[in-house]
Length: 333
Ligand code: DP6
Image 1 (cartoon, helix red, strand yellow):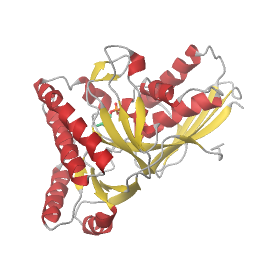
Image 2: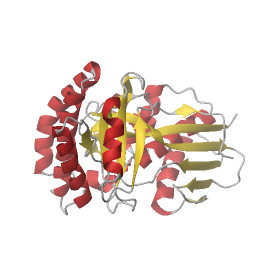
Image 3: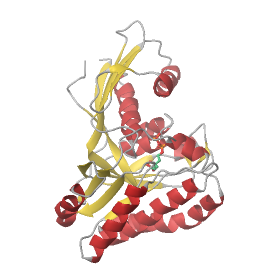
Image 4: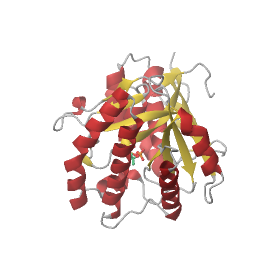
């Protein structure tokens, strides 16, 4: 069979990937840790050998299928061609892909897209690649955080040694049913972000990055422990500090990058007020203004109720901890 379909999740990082030490090999400046999101995913079908030309179509959130073009097409073709060259394959490819959530707003849409694509390419080729190697191949797509969407549940992506690509891979620290955490993604803006993460990484090497890297190993240790001990307070404190550290670096880039907006801060202040009343959730933000609230089951509904009516929150996506990329039977064509 030269056809396969993969469903792969987005993920939210507790310890973020921000900045690269090697642009070609997508080697990060630090280890990062995330959880997969069960309700934000991409489904991708890949078939080799049927078409005379490459055909790559996508269906973004609430849109119709269209041919992929521009930068996005180039990113996909780069990964397809890299794998075709590596395995000396000449066949053309047909790829259909769809997302069930808004792209490019601080929910890692390229993480789910590039993990689904890479996994589907290998499965369609009938290649029995290991999970570890698949995370490396996914990282090489250019979307580093996508490597974390391949393994199940809570995932760590190791920065690896020097310039050795093989040493920077992702693995599952705990499965999706290990700890019943929730991510309430508060969407305040669905417009495409003006400066993508790729460019953000390029601008990340400033004096604030030095401070970030000085403290990051302590936070990584805290997050590893928090997951092991299922300690939400420990996780929350380290996770919030890490998000603020990323945005400090971004805002001090030259030129500066402002991903957060007024609504982001209003939500954070409201969350802090609720926390004082004993309603516990913790925030994190990726490269966009939307806020991810991480909480345990007992506070999920009350947090959701509070923020559903909060001015500026357009809608909320509720996620449990998700599994990693997996084969599904229903093809998209
Ligand atoms: C802020 O380079 O993996 O989400 O290719 O746009 O998905 P895309 O981004 P990538 O950077 C991700 C940056 C981040 C933090 C994180 O997920 O670790």
